Length: 129
Image (tube, rainbow, N blue to C red):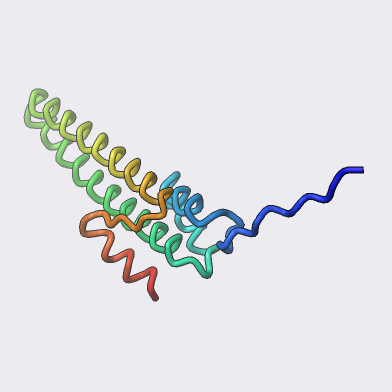
């Protein structure tokens, strides 16, 4: 006979995950994962904040990427040299976004409400509704 074991403590989130893990996962495969956690999570405002921030970040990145692709096309039509330089700018932008998402994921896992400039305040407003 084995001794009875205590059940693991219940997580405080509606998703069945610890809130800091759910907050981190909002940034992976965003905006899809963020929308899923936004629908699932009913109680925890930290998870809602990170979900909204991830959604707003994804929308901003998509919009900026579209503008950069159009400008890149125009630059390539003018000169291959200009187009190449602009492709480097896009590459730097992509690295910056990756770094921003990694920092947001780390802060979310550490249970911090780290506000991404311009986007964090919008996410805070949506999470508190």
